[in-house]
Length: 247
Image 1 (cartoon, rainbow, N blue to C red):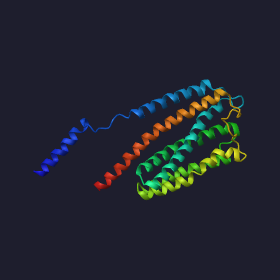
Image 2 (image 1 turned 30 degrees about the vertical axis):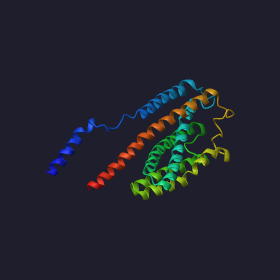
Image 3 (image 1 turned 90 degrees about the vertical axis):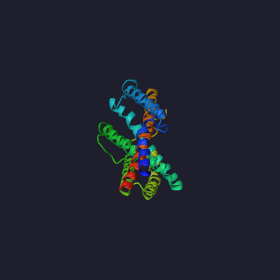
Image 4 (image 1 turned 30 degrees about the horizontal axis):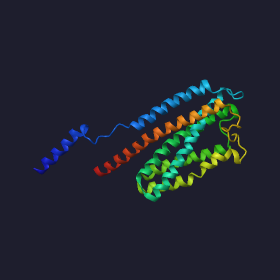
């Protein structure tokens, strides 16, 4: 009799799941953020090709700049998020911070890869080479390898407390490379000009405005994707735990 009642309750829960009061709400904030990101990216594309002036020396090749800089910025921002999340995790051991760091690491790897590719595409016609061991480029490459090491560490050690602690330490140590990248053009003689977006950096106001819009739009896109990847990481963790219970 008890077994029958238990099965009946399970069937009622399954059958009543779609109409349950506890079903997830529509992610309105996420949809609004995604809509703003989409509109911003479309505006950025229009400004890059039709509003920003063509550079007198680099011609249309210089337009890669408006994609290259935001991608590099988001790669560095992602690693800072990983380091901050790592510090909080070491103190609180709250799994949510590890999931946030995981999401940031995946997005940061993608955006920093885009920065390296666009930098090479930009450097070939301007510098005459796909790659130069410029101090800034070398520092960016080191950061990219640390992203890869972070992902491999999590993949090898699995979703455990030890894995999260080791990854947090790696992120905290590796974030030292971010200010080095930011100041490399000012500390050493590099192919990159220093303070490119300052009023004295040689960029006309239209180019600076286009860059600011691109930075804002891609940051909104990063924020939207961060929420989605975080939720995906959460579901993957839950799925692995359910699989372990079944096995």
